[in-house]
Length: 335
Image (tube, rainbow, N blue to C red):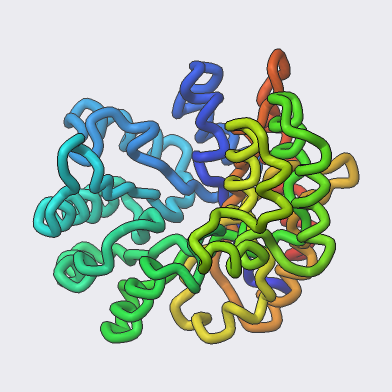
């Protein structure tokens, strides 16, 4: 039987929380119904982060004691763009990271996910604090900023140098797309993007590669897109569609082989669960077979990103997609 475990990222339920459809207690109840662990986003759901009030912490303690969730990971954002006129210094960014490590420990998490553009230069100075508070730091390997991205490569260089159990990776499965999400295409089509451009992107995936790599030659020439695609683009929305499509990658699963000792966590990205109970763009059955083969024993946390592509006057079907994805994971891991 598979040793992979299930969780849900609170990115998936941001609309429920922001529009007050669900409060934190109701979210805890929902996770218990799913039998899933919690990937929290304290910036999103905990007022005052990274230094919440004692009152806020007491309420967190009450919920944890009552519902006993499995606390898998806390997602943190070292936002270096807090000021209009400058980026944060390394010292300022490090100070923020240390506060996030301490908060994760206080909340009961033993892992944090660092957003993809976190500076590699602050990881080694933060390591003694991570070790003291028993919190693993993991950089998210996200589609559009995967293993060939310079910022990611800088982190990996530091990670390999330190070779510490407290420095690792969170892999986002958006790097394993086999088709462009059709919810994205439908959203941009409603904005007026031509079908010819949508077909162009779909044909790139059908050819066995992804737009990020297909556009590489043009990028090296200082152009955002190949000339034939550029000739089709007439509006800002069409430009954004063509730009956004580079955020879905078609990597082979074996791209992880080199990094398996460092993979601590996985985001089970979903854009659309179909009526057949599968994700439209990502072959999770094949992915989980690979993960079982290589002996991965961590969590896959459902991360629903189709929320950003809800059509006008249509509801965001976040809970429906999350529930369907969790049921699919149960099937594939043999629960």
